[in-house]
Image (cartoon, rainbow, N blue to C red; front, side):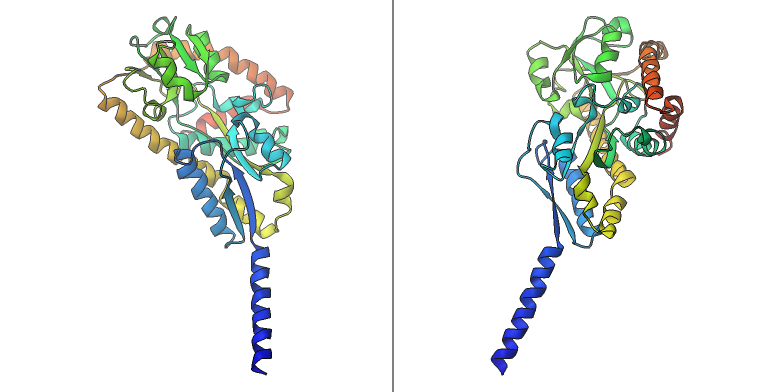
Length: 337
């Protein structure tokens, strides 16, 4: 009798454990940055933990041991379901996305928290109906901190000072604006910056402050020009396979959304702002020259970028979006966070 009761209890326990194992949903994430990068360590990992906590352990985000491809294909990796969740930058696939440029124009904002939170809200209020992310579940949008000018040759406080300088850029608006202001642009990934600058192939780069020490060029680019509001910015996304999300129970969908969206934008922005502060301290500690763009230079930047904004407004209108209202809302909200 005792043996029979033991078997019944054991069977019930095994069934319970099996049920619990089946109840846990594991979502894979492909990450193309090293695990020690602040975007992974201080944003993606904490967010994954928050998903598990919000779903009371029912959903667990598992980081894959290596990236499933180049950053430029990560949107499709999620869309096709090779991994459940991915992140990357809109600008890595030129021509595919158009409305993201709203956040990359000059003077978007002075903090990554401000621009990231504003981006998410303005996207939902103005840009979402255009359907640029309709084939995935969009979980988050964010930007890094404002981009500035760093070079090894001279003080830059006018388009004339910038003229002829060879600058490493990442493409998109940052390439267009630097070219319009007279720089010679080299479109290369950020990982190549140290080699380009140390070898003299490039005279400098456009970077947010955090990237100067992150790529160990504070000893090379000894002249920094800070542009209030940023010379440019960069747009990132966090996406999930649409069908995978739809298959989740409604309570888990809502739980994931509660820690994504604006909450995720704020988390990412806080990380970039903290890293920018450290970057500025490293630049100062190295004794580098730091100047702030004067009003005349800001006017030159404004004039150079105006045709780009006009072109974007036309594109937005063609896509059924009130671009002027969206851009104004973005720049207003980014200053209120």
